[in-house]
Image (cartoon, rainbow, N blue to C red; front, side, top):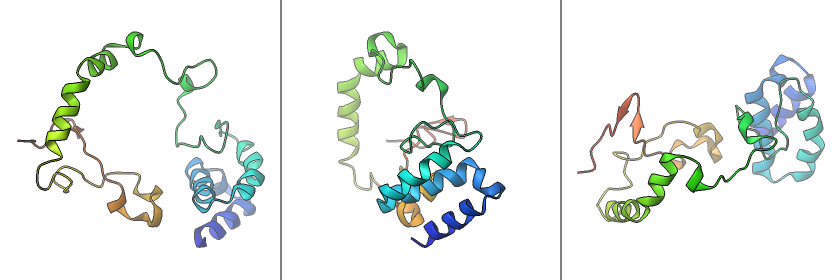
Length: 149
């Protein structure tokens, strides 16, 4: 709630900071987190009118918008026709699930050895990095930088 007052003051002042996409994303996210739908609905027309904003709804406010996901795009393409990787994942689905189920039976499977704090922690409630961890299979140009064995 304290951050929301700051966001409102910066936005209402109309300075350059109020037009930055990351600022707008944080402002919209704060309203989402607080469940203040009325304030979000009131704010949205002004956010959408900001030069450079191409988000269509307050539910779509990432740092970057993939234009292929806009008009005419299909959000869930047919897996059989969408490419080699989705087809291969579909083919190996059972094996992948078996490997993961075996992995989670190991002591320490949820530890920082495998799941690390990487990014987007500023979007987590309380800015608590421990609430957002990732198991990176490809990191800094390396595949499997750690071993599962």
